[in-house]
Length: 51
Image (cartoon, rainbow, N blue to C red; front, top):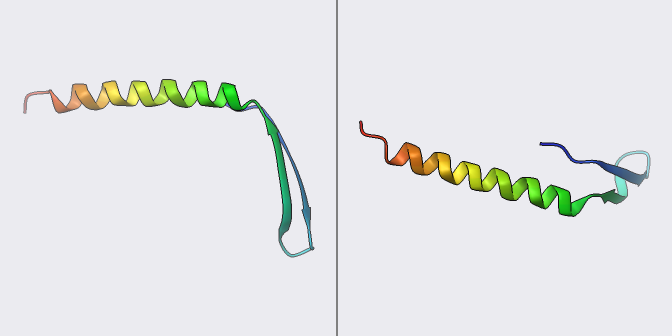
């Protein structure tokens, strides 16, 4: 899985105080949907396998 994005942040020298991310959310959602579907198929095949 991959996701193209850029993160911009500011700190107070100890921790991140502001964070803004620009990325391809639709592409990420598509990848996650495909992963979820494949995982569901794999779990179904495993559950139906005889012992």
